[in-house]
Image (cartoon, rainbow, N blue to C red):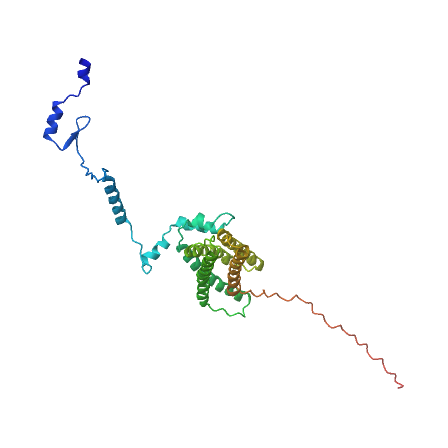
Length: 311
């Protein structure tokens, strides 16, 4: 019986008195008092509780309130997102454009569905400025070699370079994106990149030409053509490796023609800049070889024979 009494529930007077004095508080271990939390529970006709539904609805409302509205196309905030990159991301994308390799997709490995316009904008601006400056320096070097050449600063080259570079970096990606969109309607498996991703790929592919243009100041023709061919190969290879996962689902003829046009346009840009901004320098004037002046042979005139007196 004693064991049964010990196992039975007993009322403690201290706890009863405390609860009577503070009915809104509950006892915890260590005689600590904590306030009770009242949870409103709603019962529906089927006998289920609606507390979870109320919590989910409140969470959704809070998330919707915190969500930022997408700015309009005509606002500055819409374009601000395209320039939201840090230095490490830009350097990583430049490195990826300088070191293309098969199976390494520039869009998937470097852009990661976050294309930017900051890098392409400043790369095109830098390339146009460097082209104009080095083109003027080439004329200065030509005047040093040939004093008959009259040098005058050609500021219009800045406009020509900027127009050519920016038109190429925007119009060619636009035409490429439109063509791939059309081929997507013909071949459903063709999935092109977005227009901004295509512009970003072309913009970063032009970075390799900036150091190449500086090297073109060296008046060595074979070195100029070698550096230009190397830069063209790296830049075009990056474009081909990036576009190949998209065009390989198309027919073989369409894929080969498209990639050939991409490489050809890239080569036309490089050779056009080479011939327009870097005219061939005149050869250095060489002194004619010293020729020994030959003196005419001396003719010794013999005196006439003496006349005889008889004559």
